[in-house]
Amino acid sequence: MKDYGLKLYSIKNNDIFVLTIICALDLALLIYCTSTLSISYYEALVFFNEQDSILHKIITASCKLFGQNDFALRIPMIFFHIISVILLYKISKFYIKFHQDRIIAILLFVFLPGTVASALIVNNAGLCLMITLFILYFFHKNNIYITYILMASSIFVDSSFMILFLAFFAYGVYTKNATLAWLSAIFFTISLYFFGFDTQGKPSSHFIDTFGIFAAVFSPFIFIFFIYAIYRIWIKEKKDILWFLSVVSFCISIVLSIRQKVQLEEFLPFCIIATPLMIRIFFSSYRVRLPEFRKKHKIALAFVFLFLFSNWLIIIFNPVLYNFIDNPKKHFAYKFHVAKELSKELSKLNIYEINTQNYKLALRLKFYGISNGGNLALIENNNDFFVKKFDKIIHKL
Image (tube, rainbow, N blue to C red; front, side, top):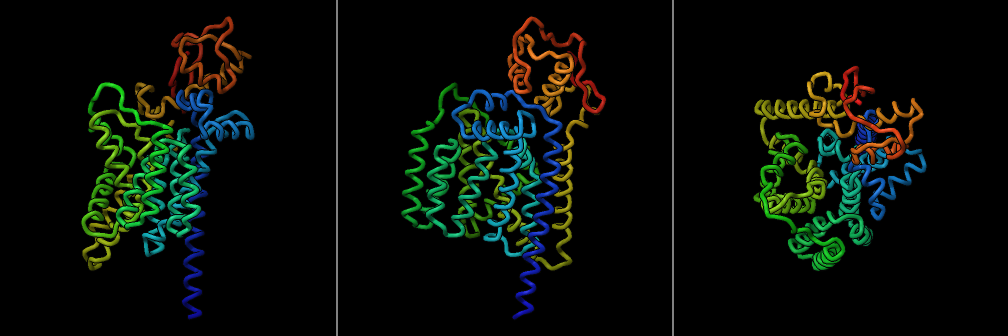
């Protein structure tokens, strides 16, 4: 019995060590990636214009603490991400039996393109993801009061939590938990009243576009397996709250996309946290086979992780891609570049006020202390300045 206790202690400490290494490496590379990025126009809108949002208050507080720079802008998002990784690991214990499988589930989550985006881009996705995982963690720990307090508080954070309330309502009905169902319905109604639901505009189908974005966020292979996993659980396995949350989010986004363009950042955080379910399904299929018949599973797992890891490195070291692209504006992260480099060039000339007709660029430059106005005009493509990444000219000024 004593040896068994020591073994459990050793496994637990080994898991904590591996998780710490994953988080440390992830943190270091995300901070490096932050140093290569500029504020985008939509992030500048959050920083300057969306003064009523909680995210705006968090970002501005960070900039007051660390100075108005890219590190201060993105460090709250990275913090939300690291906390989310830890929470998902804790939640995975309720779904995955073997500790090595839990580590693989966390690695899968970390490497997903959508996860990396939520860790770097200033929008509500990262914050909503962290709050959702807190709610799920306390729900699984049967700490109902904290769960309900967090759910009630999330009403005023973002409209995307309506999806969470619908999922909890469906789960409450499924498990015949009247209290959970009624409270979730009340939270949903309040959120709907507070934020409303946009059905304006001409009906148009964005079904294919929505599938394409899901495939990009998950990566094509993982997205296919995600659909297979939620379908398999639907017909064969026990349905937990994590399954309800992923299914409700995915199905509603697909249905809405038939009529209108969907703001997928409101749905994707509730889908990418399904990695413990996917890993459980995969290894259940793997372990029911004799060792000599597991080769295909091993090859598939190795291929998928190699593909995801390569994508992850491409995102982190994305400026290198400019060396292989003829038109820099086709770079997937182009809208996150140029502004910081331009502001540095202008600052070297002691220019802190300049006229430009590009209102998006003007708002981005404002973050770096270059205001729109004065007697000097910024004319693009006049070849006075060159913005470079890895010795490749990506913008001429």
